[in-house]
Image (tube, rainbow, N blue to C red; front, side, top):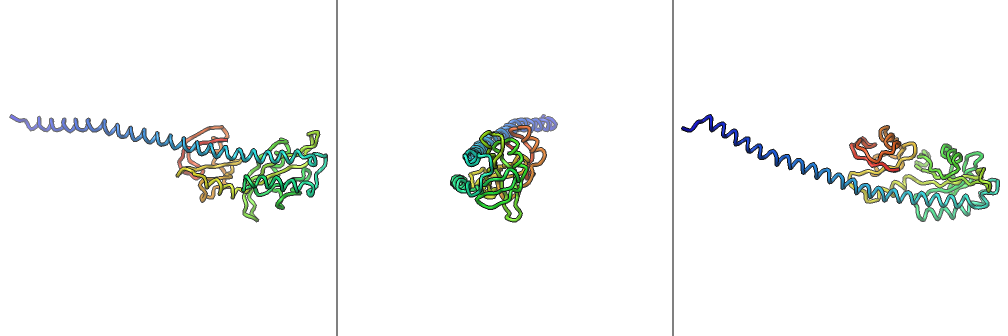
Length: 258
C-alpha cells in the first residue's frame, strides 16, 4: 500500500536534490561573473595605466623642453657678467625662446626674468608681476630648475604655473637673474581633456602642495582644490595604487605616479 508520508518525504528529497543540483551551478555562475568582473577591472586598469603612462611621458618631455630653454638662456654670457643684464639686452633672446616654446607648447603664456635683489619681474614678453615668492626663494636656494605652485590671478581669471631657473655668474656663486616660463593651466587642461580617455576614468596632476593643476574630466571645478588628506598621504608615501574615494568623493581605484 502506498504511504502518503513516504510520498511527502520522497517529494521533499526530490526538491532537495533539485536544489542541490541548482546550487552548484548558481555558485559557478556567481563565481564566473565575479572572475569576469575582476578580469574586466584588471583590463581597465591596464588600459588606464597605458594612457596615463603616455600622458606622463608627454608632460615630462615638455617639462624637459622648458628646462633646456631656460638653461640656454641662463648660459648666455651677457647674463653672467656679474651684474643684472638690461631688459633691452635680453629681450630679443627671450622672444626667440618664447617662440620656440610656443611652437611646441601652445599653453606657454609668458617668459621673462626676475631681479634677484627685489624678487620682481623686470623683463618679460607679457608685463606681469611676480606673485609667488615661495617658488622664487626655492629656486634661489637650490640653484636649480624649479617647478612652481598653482597660482590664480583674480584680475585676469588666469590659473598658471611657473618654471624657474637661475643664471649664475661665471664663478657659479651668485644669482645674476632668475628666468621663468609660465604655463597657462586653463589651456593645459583643455589640451589634456581632448585626449582619448576611458569613460568613467579620471586623471589629475597636482603641485607639491597637493593642489590640483589639471583634472580630467573638466566640469567638476576641482582645479585649484586641495587633495583630501588620505590621498595626499598616499601620494607622499609613494603608494602606486589604492582603493579609496577620489577627490570628488566617488569610490575609485586610484593609480598614483610622480
